[in-house]
Amino acid sequence: MQTFTPDQDGYREEIAGFQTGIRSTPQLVVVAETAADVAAAVRQAAERELPVSVQATGHGLRAPAEGVLISTRRMTGVTVDPNRAVARVDAGATWGSVITAAAEHGLAPLSGSAPGVGVVGYTLGGGFGLLGRHFGLASDRVRAADVVLPDGTATRGPLGTGIVTALEFGLVPVTALYGGGLYFDTAKIPDVLRTWRDWTTGLPDTVGTSVALLPYPDLPMVPEPLRGKHIAHVRVAYLGTGGDRLVAPLRALGPLQDTLVTMPFTDSGQIAAEPPHPHSYLGDNRVLPALPDDILTAVLDHAGPGAPVPTVLIIDLLGGAYQHSSAPDFTPDSRYTVRALSVVEPDAATVQTAHAKLFAQLDAPSTGRLRSFVYGQPLG
Ligand SMILES: Cc1cc2nc3c(=O)[nH]c(=O)nc-3n(C[C@H](O)[C@H](O)[C@H](O)COP(=O)(O)OP(=O)(O)OC[C@H]3O[C@@H](n4cnc5c(N)ncnc54)[C@H](O)[C@@H]3O)c2cc1C
Image 1: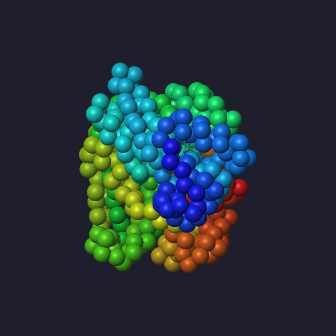
Image 2: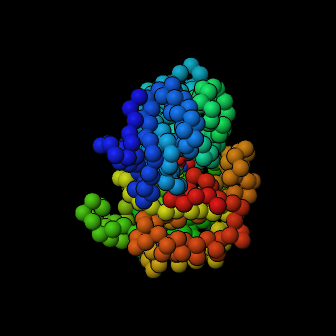
Image 3: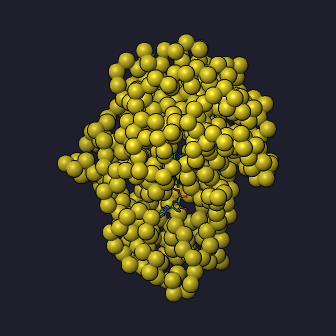
């Protein structure tokens, strides 16, 4: 088992993850390759009376890690039992590898927008996925978890009792879906928000959808029709036939770019097409029972072309199977999320002040927030 102290080469590289805005300074980094390594690290921390934290991909960091940081990113094992439609993954597996392994058996996991996100961290937060309105939360499919308890004992136990070293969860029989995005120019943003909101009121639970407001930078890596523009991006993941008919009211608004197609589930990362590169970001969200016009106006003020700070703002449709979930973040009234995410620019305080102004307008009608989408700040 390899370890790093702050004075050793490789220490910073081992800590580096997707979120670059939080600088962890643990006294010891333990590079875990097995459950026994995790248990040994936990025992060592207990003996030295140091706090323990764990990191897989670093997508969900909220506070700097101190004490002993257990890095699980080499624990990437994934196996699929097609007879039971169950996957077993080690602590550091990402959705991308589960999607690939499950597809070989005509199955899919309840993964989310980005294949690079870690399975365990995602599932611990409930796991709100592309197909979740139909199949529910990822956490509701967990069959078993191997955990290391705070005293270093390795056992089988519920999520939340210790560090997870392996997770077993159910897969669903999905091989393809109708999905992708419609990208609209700046002038159409208010219309797109209203049309999307109205469209979502009558959808079957086989449709997962969100709308994002995206300030695309004027950089060569951004495709030409979107480069340097403030865009409304409608994302769709639909399990059913007649996809073109379903999205006709949105297409009628005249997108700049249209990537909707019947695709294998292995391409599902292209639906949201989020940037896979590490960066620094701050984010928060609220769950709402409805999207009246005054909320759409608040969203536009905060994340439209005149936004006080560059903000990616995503509104997701909830409802469907989420209404029956046991997870505390979801109530029968949880109908939409409003999520704001900004790169830390010009500084964290300016971003937090701007986000706080938006969420102050959403607090009264809000039914709560999703823990998974609180980034770069501790949960209050
Ligand atoms: C680009 C992007 C897209 C996302 N898309 C979605 C989405 O579609 N749906 C959704 O629900 N969420 C989504 N998320 C949120 C994501 O699920 C959380 O940020 C999650 O915490 C990431 O887990 P990780 O292992 O990748 O990150 P890490 O930062 O490595 O881990 C996050 C936290 O999880 C805990 N943790 C990790 N591993 C273990 C372990 N083995 N045992 C115990 N605790 C552990 C720790 O508290 C750790 O701080 C997204 C996040 C990003 C940045």
